[in-house]
Length: 333
Image (tube, rainbow, N blue to C red):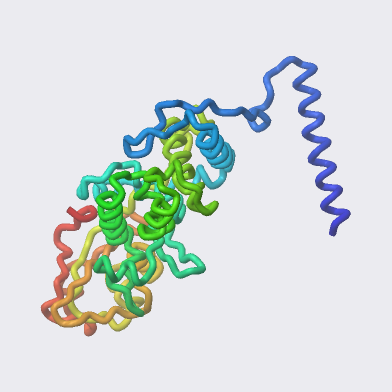
């Protein structure tokens, strides 16, 4: 096994050497996959309008590390461009609703890469929210339902946090850093060290790098071609084309329900990742909103039942189930 790896490495090295020699003797330009460059740091880079003190050698080097690492981590960065096309249009209006700067959307990239993931500590979703924190912000978290997997609801929770943190620190930079280590943790470090700026603090490595990682992706997304990315050449993932139905009674079998609306279990769970089990128990007075695919998505020609009556007659829905299939619409207002 080891000999095989050495042999492959030798072949790769030989190929690169031949390419370099060929281009150096012909006088042609280097092939694009062999061109590597350093990046000049713009003094105008800011976070949420707050300047970054690049006059400090330490600050410049910390940003330099992240911009080089992420600009040249092409596979991940391209995936973020792809996912951002789908999810930033969901996140941005919610930030605006709370009066928060748009730069905060890049926190979701750093936290999760814009996918619903679970950390070893149990932080969940795009915004990596712990169960206790989620419940404090009014999220429903139980065996069958977990709002942390709902991008819109979890973004609302994150926005509530950012507003509270900004009121405490009077700085979005500090608010973002506190998202990583907690408000009390950051405040304690400020008190200990006698400073009130994130950039003046000596912190653990993760939080020390945290804001600079956010800044690096803001910079790459705002100036993609300078960093070697052409958004026009990246096939981003379009937003899901959905309509919504209101559910006010228990659905004992989501698989059967999905088929009844001309979809399938996989798609229903993909569009509604907050559904954590095969059933949805609905308490009296509670209503849930399900997203279902409109005609044409996932190569389906017919995605809506022919009439509301055909759904209402299903045994797992009450006669008063709040389902409106007459006028599908996009997203939430």
